[in-house]
Length: 296
Image (cartoon, rainbow, N blue to C red; front, side):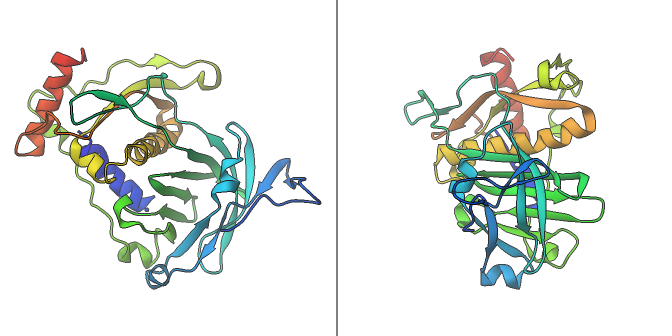
């Protein structure tokens, strides 16, 4: 039952919606700048529709992304912002925190099956010349989504809906493209659920790297319609879930010293239990199901 999350995500996706390689010095020797290995996995692509919408299409070198190591910081050279402008980024490859429980999908026989998890590359950091800026890039089978945000400018990156098969584009959030690129409006009706308890439960204190950051375990359940948005591709659907949680964590860690840990994810390839005629009642069904069947 991810309609609320999807609605937020669509806004984020629309708001977030190359053949290049590691720069080498000599043969096989990486180049370093300011102590960081320099890579160039992104380049400009030419797509007429993107040009017409005042945005810049992005070409992605998947092989160059694949070799980036989790926990290591890199300097991304010349990330395209427009036809003529680009920016260097300082980013670290990160992962989405989980408690180790594998995501599942309910099949046509009502049996829960493990989901095959695909590759996902999540990069977090800042513009090279502005350490106070924010950069988030997530590339998975679901698509390419992210942002480059600073006090002076904001750019969104999105490949749009999975079924549309679009190339990723980057655009100025305050430029003409923001009026030309369609975004799904935000819709949240959780507050309409009768008897909703809005009190926030106490979280647990994180340790090690997140010693000063509160963690919240997040169980994610969806509906059949959500998986249909990805043509039944469970790997892509879960990649999108990971993108949402990772993007949310970027904001929550910064603003409220809190991050989410995925404790459970369930997709539905068959009819889900939320069969009421409107979303408000479906959310009530969702709450009751989790209360009585999931010990929540």
